[in-house]
Image (tube, rainbow, N blue to C red; front, side, top):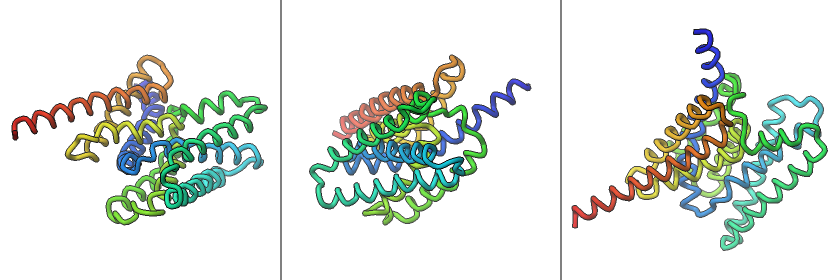
Length: 258
């Protein structure tokens, strides 16, 4: 029983954090795919991560809320710039977003080059450390995800113009701290791709995300593997299976109707 309680104390917060991210990222990812700005999640996540690096390196003993504010400031600034590019240079938007990701990643690497634990910091930024998430972390970020989902479905108008970029920046700032850049990208794009042929895309994307999250954490825990990379693989496998099934069902329905 003691072992079970200890395991739950470690895995429980990771599962809840992953579920919050899966539920919130699904509709955001569908919108990203609709807009055709696939690299925006990577770019904003990396820029928010750069804010985390800057805050921790240049401010002595910063409070968690200050770090959160700095990371969010970086993410919102990126959103403002990308919104401006969407209006003025739509044909080159994806290329510029991709370049922003590379620049942010390079700056983070340069800042951490002489850090005694720079290698670990880069690894945690990219692949996350979900099993180190605590119930305190869950409680701190849960209101953010609840606010995003409430705004997204109760006020559809916020999905347009600058509202989308602000909500996106809020979500990514929290998510990159909890699960890392790779899982952020996977949880946004792969469920959206899985739902392309679905009649109920949000339900399909949620199902893909929840399935991937639960199976990924279970496999990683049982086989003692890094959780982040395993979850990314689980997202990919779930998306492939779900998209194949929904596409096949769609063809069968059209065949019967014909």
